[in-house]
View 1 (tube, rainbow, N blue to C red):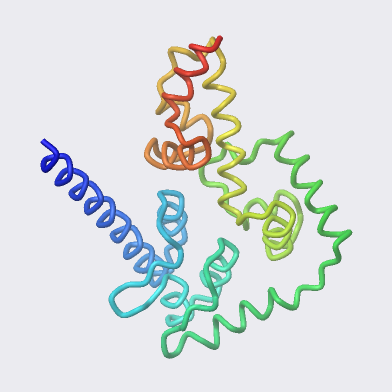
View 2: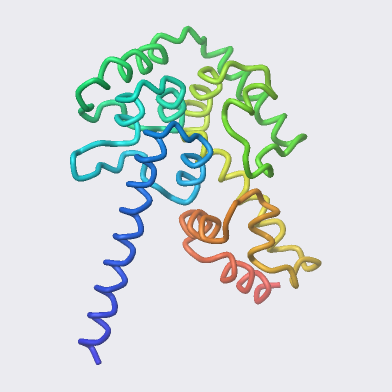
Length: 225
């Protein structure tokens, strides 16, 4: 019996490892193809921004290698590590993009002002409920340059763009899960209404924050009330 359990656990770990590897490789491919929509989908599905393939490439390196400037800037905004050794041909573009962010002249006072604007906008407009909201789109809504917005989120909220957006989505989902009127709503529909594109991503992000699944969270709330 113990042997069966051990084998099952090993199999599960292996399958998870394969899944994460596949997402990472798909992310690298999408970045090389300059496919922003696919890159966003894979990041939200849990792809590791700094995953390295057999040759040591990351999504950021691949985008830089093919000269996809906007993709490079997007990946840096999303939190990709610019310090991993780049492929031949990609270093200059990564350095140029990261240097641009390093030289941003944004005062603490202005940054905090942007943070308040962002919080007010999210409270009133709930842009995070849009499953396709991106940092360039949000920056247009706020009329704040995206590199200023990225820096503000990184410093004032101590997370990257997707971490910030997903935290707001989870808070919205918590309200739905605790609402007795929503008891018959499926977890999948809760995920969609909170702005997630899939139940898998919703479960992963929710469990990372609460250490329990959305269903377990809802069931425990019902028991205590």
